[in-house]
Length: 111
Image 1 (cartoon, rainbow, N blue to C red):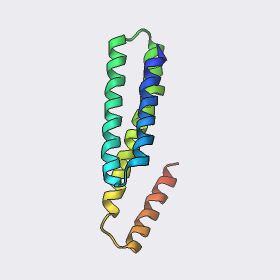
Image 2: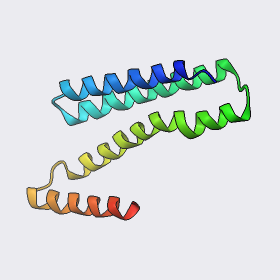
Image 3: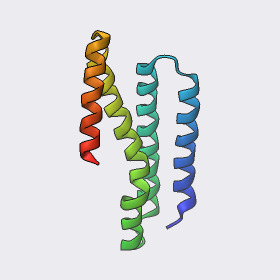
Image 4: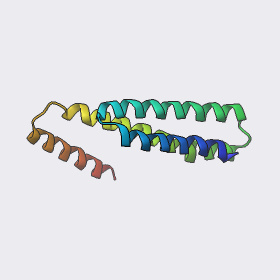
């Protein structure tokens, strides 16, 4: 499996996300654009994978175990961030603090 094409897609996504974070002032705009970038990168990865064809079982395992999760994890992160931001958006500061504390407890329990 040629890793260069996949690594280029992943590195480009990481660069674009880094730039986006430095430029975005609105969290919802950042999340929306980041999800779009992740989806685009995932589509490119799939196209590259299927265009190359499955050369071996090891290549397929490597793709689904190591390469795809590097993008998918970013997509999941931004989707969860969106969910957190939507739920805390119009609440008082006290309620937001309580809500974020509960979110952190839930995340720590998953570890």
